[in-house]
Image (cartoon, rainbow, N blue to C red):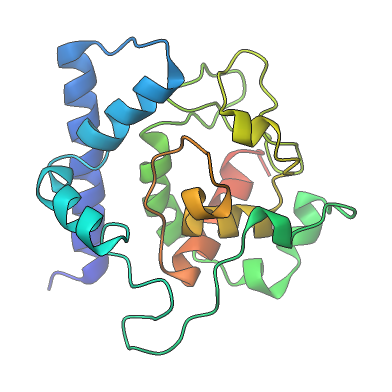
Length: 210
């Protein structure tokens, strides 16, 4: 019996394969980061879904498959999305301390691994790996945003003062453009709070050799 996770996993694999095919065929080498991100948004990890979904997403003012900002799919009022100004960075914990919190103890690492394929469309995870269309994110937890001198970040991110804690990343992944207006990361966000937790839990391991 085919499960929802099987379908989701197949869809993600298709999206990643679409990215690889497009990059190999057209050999994208745009230097301007805004243009590079525009290419990714319209022609890569969203694959063919963008062609049919872009017009509808523009009309409705929401991301692909996302609920309206104030409701969930069941029509229940959703908690408001957090933005950068909602956080202070006076106390930063270690990865080990975050993993002792019940929220991340319960994270589904397998689900997080599947979801991380969306990140791999633009980012690299390993120590010393080159940047992709987005920056390498090895060891980024507990570090300030826009930390790589050799990557062209948006001015908004450079001036944000953000430090990447698990909570901040979860809020960011809900909808980057709302979390930090002016960001050039073209991502419609994960609407599921559980998915965001699982992905962040996986990234804490995968990008830190924890």
